[in-house]
Length: 309
Image 1 (tube, rainbow, N blue to C red):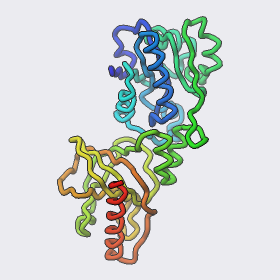
Image 2 (spheres, rainbow, N blue to C red):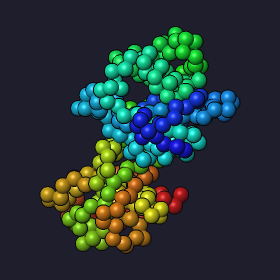
Image 3 (tube, helix red, strand yellow):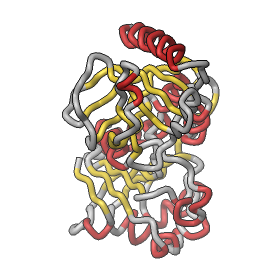
Image 4 (cartoon, one colour):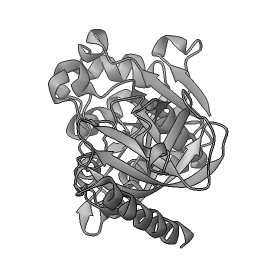
């Protein structure tokens, strides 16, 4: 897959293509259906399949205080899209200039003029252009004028309800990893860098990797989770992850820390991804550190059983 970061990086306009357009945060089941439909259409007509998206959620530009947490980092999103088999990914910079374009200009100059869209695939609720006027009704009206075929797809249903990024965020914040993964169609990954902590886990016999998220991703509900940890060298280890304020330890503060199973290496400063598998329990305050250590041993044993399945 060829990736274009910014419209200005496309030196030669595409002559023709099928374009899947959307924000694609999370690349969930609904997003995947849009992209797979675009690929199938492109293959039928012997033209490249393109995905067109933005470098940030539009809300981050118009109302930063209401910007939802991300479900994927840019690298994760690009990787998930590439795995589907598209020919090119175009990531447009969402700024004042782009936001001010009318749907006609957006369609004429970008989708047709730059990307050569002979077909456009999107979700029924997606809108583009100034005042979000480029909706499905608009595209339906102008497709013959501009010369493209429109494929507007209804929401994909998961357990009877539409797949959406909002639904995934809600389930993660509720600690419902199973439903979040069902809607995503892939495991949830939280990316970050391992940073130094209080080293309390090491003194208790359970050294942990403290994660500082790289982007403003959604952090699942406080509690203990069975996870897999993807190191930057490609290795994968099981782990037990604790999210929360560590109430048993006075003044410990908030953290995302993971005890990696059968692992004893220095990984400070390195990038990792934590893949959530199952929530074990909520965060608890124990009467003593000894009681905490007993519970940690139980959590690790349960984690091993879950990951062995």
